Amino acid sequence: MAESPIDVLIRWEEAGAAWRTRSLGADRAVVALCACTGEQVDELCSDDPRLLAYLAARPRSDAAAD
Image (cartoon, rainbow, N blue to C red):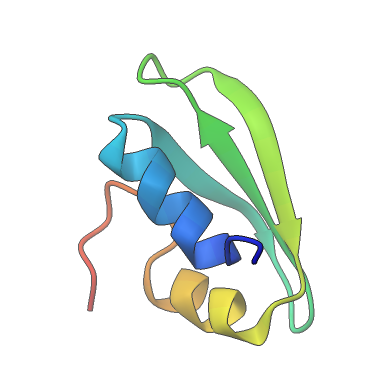
């Protein structure tokens, strides 16, 4: 079973790295996956409605969850 986009972000953050939303629309999100230095090393693109809602509440890894 493939990892959900939210699971990817959680795993990324638990590894000590950072992520931030680059764009968030009604039907698509693009998230920058960054090294602990802040440099973008990968990108996550998804149309998963659960991820869109998650990012609306928490747009970056250093933002407090609502």
